[in-house]
Image 1: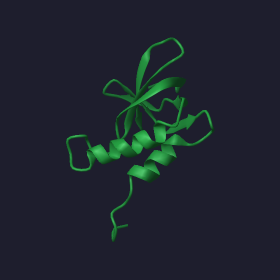
Image 2: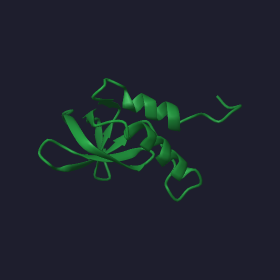
Image 3: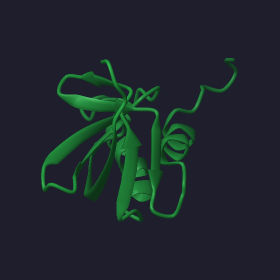
Image 4: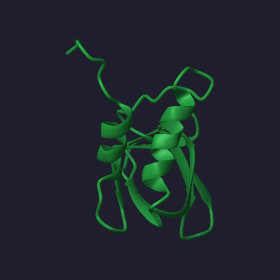
Length: 105
Protein backbone atom coordinates (compact mmCIF):
# COMPACT_ATOMS: atom_id res chain seq x y z
CA UNK A 1 0.00 0.00 0.00
CA UNK A 2 1.39 3.36 -0.94
CA UNK A 3 -0.47 5.87 1.24
CA UNK A 4 -2.13 5.66 4.63
CA UNK A 5 -5.73 6.80 4.73
CA UNK A 6 -7.98 7.72 7.62
CA UNK A 7 -11.65 6.77 7.62
CA UNK A 8 -14.41 7.37 10.16
CA UNK A 9 -17.05 4.66 10.49
CA UNK A 10 -20.43 4.56 12.20
CA UNK A 11 -23.01 1.77 12.70
CA UNK A 12 -20.29 -0.55 14.00
CA UNK A 13 -21.00 -4.28 13.86
CA UNK A 14 -18.61 -6.89 15.27
CA UNK A 15 -17.87 -9.79 12.92
CA UNK A 16 -15.47 -11.70 15.18
CA UNK A 17 -12.86 -10.95 17.84
CA UNK A 18 -10.52 -9.02 15.56
CA UNK A 19 -12.77 -7.78 12.73
CA UNK A 20 -15.68 -5.35 12.57
CA UNK A 21 -17.51 -3.42 9.91
CA UNK A 22 -19.04 0.02 9.73
CA UNK A 23 -20.41 2.62 7.35
CA UNK A 24 -18.24 5.47 6.08
CA UNK A 25 -19.47 9.03 5.44
CA UNK A 26 -20.37 8.08 1.85
CA UNK A 27 -22.62 5.22 3.00
CA UNK A 28 -20.18 2.48 1.96
CA UNK A 29 -19.58 -0.56 4.19
CA UNK A 30 -15.96 -1.11 5.24
CA UNK A 31 -14.46 -4.10 7.04
CA UNK A 32 -11.60 -3.45 9.46
CA UNK A 33 -9.22 -5.95 11.03
CA UNK A 34 -7.36 -4.88 14.15
CA UNK A 35 -3.66 -5.11 13.28
CA UNK A 36 -1.55 -7.10 15.70
CA UNK A 37 -4.57 -8.93 17.14
CA UNK A 38 -5.11 -12.56 16.22
CA UNK A 39 -8.39 -13.55 17.84
CA UNK A 40 -9.64 -17.09 17.56
CA UNK A 41 -11.98 -17.87 14.67
CA UNK A 42 -15.66 -18.25 15.58
CA UNK A 43 -15.57 -22.02 14.93
CA UNK A 44 -12.53 -22.47 17.20
CA UNK A 45 -12.82 -23.06 20.93
CA UNK A 46 -13.02 -19.61 22.53
CA UNK A 47 -13.89 -17.82 19.29
CA UNK A 48 -17.37 -16.84 20.44
CA UNK A 49 -15.91 -15.59 23.73
CA UNK A 50 -13.46 -13.37 21.82
CA UNK A 51 -16.33 -11.99 19.74
CA UNK A 52 -18.37 -11.23 22.89
CA UNK A 53 -15.40 -9.35 24.39
CA UNK A 54 -15.06 -7.28 21.21
CA UNK A 55 -18.81 -6.55 21.22
CA UNK A 56 -18.63 -5.42 24.84
CA UNK A 57 -16.07 -2.77 23.86
CA UNK A 58 -17.47 -1.75 20.47
CA UNK A 59 -21.16 -1.73 21.45
CA UNK A 60 -20.48 1.39 23.55
CA UNK A 61 -19.02 3.17 20.51
CA UNK A 62 -20.96 5.26 17.99
CA UNK A 63 -18.05 6.07 15.68
CA UNK A 64 -14.47 4.93 15.18
CA UNK A 65 -11.64 6.52 13.25
CA UNK A 66 -9.17 4.12 11.65
CA UNK A 67 -5.84 4.78 9.99
CA UNK A 68 -5.20 2.26 7.24
CA UNK A 69 -1.96 0.31 7.62
CA UNK A 70 -2.56 -2.39 4.98
CA UNK A 71 -5.22 -4.44 3.21
CA UNK A 72 -5.84 -8.15 3.72
CA UNK A 73 -8.62 -10.36 2.32
CA UNK A 74 -10.75 -7.34 1.38
CA UNK A 75 -10.38 -5.74 4.79
CA UNK A 76 -8.59 -2.66 5.97
CA UNK A 77 -5.94 -3.52 8.57
CA UNK A 78 -5.47 -0.81 11.18
CA UNK A 79 -3.29 -0.51 14.28
CA UNK A 80 -4.67 2.93 15.08
CA UNK A 81 -8.38 2.85 15.95
CA UNK A 82 -9.97 5.44 18.23
CA UNK A 83 -13.58 6.19 19.11
CA UNK A 84 -15.50 9.43 19.51
CA UNK A 85 -14.53 9.54 23.21
CA UNK A 86 -10.82 9.38 22.37
CA UNK A 87 -10.41 5.81 23.62
CA UNK A 88 -7.74 3.69 21.95
CA UNK A 89 -9.97 0.87 20.70
CA UNK A 90 -7.00 -1.06 19.26
CA UNK A 91 -5.33 -1.18 22.67
CA UNK A 92 -8.55 -2.03 24.51
CA UNK A 93 -9.24 -4.97 22.19
CA UNK A 94 -5.65 -6.23 22.35
CA UNK A 95 -5.65 -6.04 26.16
CA UNK A 96 -8.99 -7.79 26.48
CA UNK A 97 -8.64 -10.50 23.84
CA UNK A 98 -4.92 -11.05 23.27
CA UNK A 99 -3.87 -12.22 26.72
CA UNK A 100 -0.72 -14.31 27.10
CA UNK A 101 -1.07 -17.75 28.60
CA UNK A 102 -0.09 -18.05 32.25
CA UNK A 103 3.42 -19.31 32.85
CA UNK A 104 4.69 -18.20 29.43
CA UNK A 105 6.47 -15.01 28.48
